[in-house]
Length: 291
Image 1 (cartoon, rainbow, N blue to C red):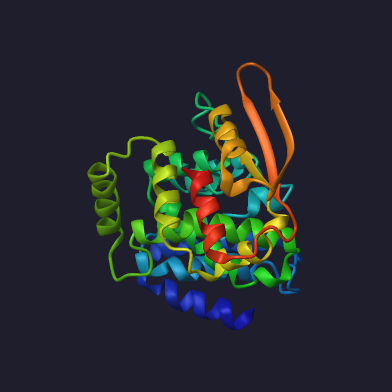
Image 2 (image 1 turned 90 degrees about the vertical axis):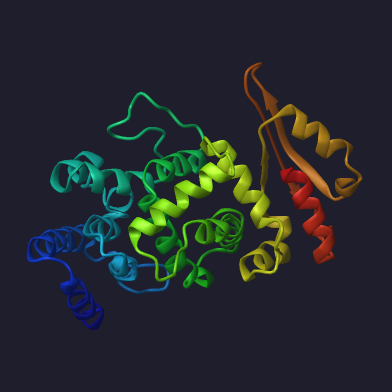
């Protein structure tokens, strides 16, 4: 880890002295907060935030680098609260960290908006500040490099989410190009306007459609090979009826639960073991399910 830390401090010399001081403060805070935590791979946990931050240095945005160092502190360090992050590192860094922190249905400074869906919450945040997307993509890229250390069901969940949302999102925000942050922001908002995407639900649907045009990625193949371990969620009665009446699903799925309280509908199903034997058929089934 010492070599990685050294590389990081060399890399941030592109920032002003004042910005380097702020980054160093966040570095020390995050390192102490994560302490002796380790990843599933057995590596020191702090290797992950450093790696994510290092990958974002080329955008030359010190708040983005700081947020990368801190992005798991609230989620994984009981003594760190979201209030700590906002107060110590400012509202912009706080918002970036907030956007990628799980199990939250609101934002610390936006408590008048409540989200019941984590992906909708994240997409809403990215539509306010595209740096949220850059941070999450960098986080997911590094997590995917150690995917094999996770339990099989978590591998499948992460792989599908990566294929369905993050792969098309990378293209949308010009990730891993020579573009500057300003160019990324301009391009992203031009894209939203061109495709008439005005809210997180429309953006999410658009990302799904982009994803299902190309099922060749390694992450989708993980889902395909372990299709009987994926739990699919349906939140509308119309979709539930569509699946029930669609020949592509007949004899291949099992509904685990179906419930409704009059306002919200929820159903969950899994593919039966051995039901998925053909890659192209699975593509057809899933693309039908998603729309």
